[in-house]
Image (cartoon, rainbow, N blue to C red):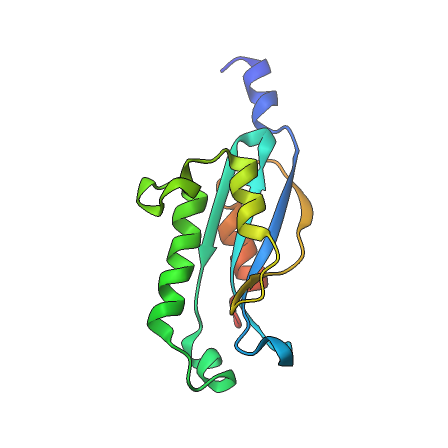
Length: 138
């Protein structure tokens, strides 16, 4: 492999991310983290990964419709991935999809503030953030 190619692989790039939250009652401002959305424009990377801790959610909200929440979380993953089954939103450019997915909402599925980071690669970026920010006992 040429030296120039090796250098390109280790180029650091900035990325933006947001935590996906389940907010059962907006007025109480209680939530559990249920996923992450990550955008790295320099690497042409947009991904979302979710993990619903149903036991924690039921403790916070016994009446939760787990099936409906799972469907909404799956839709976020599909939109981020550009999956055509997710409809017209999945066809938008990466940046537009990220901004749509992270825009403020007053529903039970919300995202936290957009934050930034730096990475060298995106291979395990979304999984790493999921372990750090969502999984209760990694």
